[in-house]
Image (cartoon, rainbow, N blue to C red; front, side, top):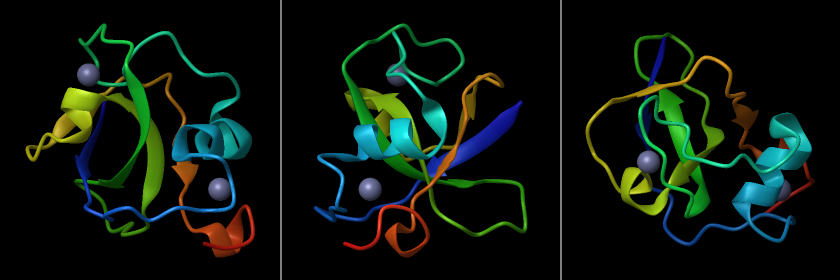
Amino acid sequence: MMKVRNVAVGNLTCKCNNWLEHWCRYGGGFVPKNCSEKSCNNSDLVGAHVQKNDSLDNQTYIIPLCTAHSHQREVMTIMDSRALALANPDKTCGGY
Ligand SMILES: [Zn+2]
Ligand SMILES: [Zn+2]
């Protein structure tokens, strides 16, 4: 099980229409039916900025979360089948 926590980035945007589209293009494929939190069935998804909790990897990733989970401050567990997409536009879509 992967554990992640939200990172605050304000209204940061990239060259994709939104961060959910960014996730689809750089890792996810198609927009999923529900939130990536392991037991959540909410479908009001946004592309949330997260970091892995128990890892030396301090890169920021995008993952689809419902609005409520995208605002959660506590560490949450993500379903294993959900891909993480690298957030950094310099390494993906080309810039902010
Ligand atoms: Zn992008
Ligand atoms: Zn959720």
